[in-house]
Length: 257
Image (cartoon, rainbow, N blue to C red):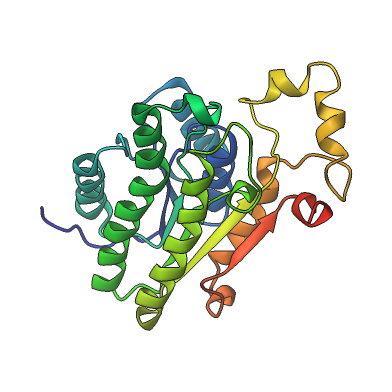
């Protein structure tokens, strides 16, 4: 597919950006001056809401629709990015799922879907983004939104935790491979973050209070807390930071070590 002349605006793709952390990342990067590409499996209500919110604020956003569990869809999406924008400056691998299952109830299909969405998709998105960055000699920024579950086990996450640990290992390996091109690769490990997905749970009984006391700061984080770190790592000032793993958990992990 033909490559368009590079967009005047730097381009940032945030996978899984129709709601929650992903939406906040896209909104923040757009506010920082990027053309934010909103990724979801379809132009669903959440994706439209994110797009419209960014545009209403006077910033730039477009869709990048793809089912990231399929490599062919990832390749098609990046071919369209190449054709429509000619560049990519920032990739944030945020898309992920966490279906809760006890260790003895995890099926092969649950395992495969979790690993395909969380780990395989990030690998092939990084592969495609890096190719375009190298071609354009772009000192790009690649990140993955991992989790403290990469370090801290969970009773209903035996299939999920390995994907989060794998994401960190993957970013470390890409940091070694891509550093010579000026591309940095880092992992971000959120703790409990308040999003629409867990809003009902947090509003039930003592759930919020029980989670708040797990942190050092005494409160639960917001998607914007993650977005602030992503925005910094995307800046030229962060050029010497690569292969890093950064906690955004209010001290939850260190409190329980």
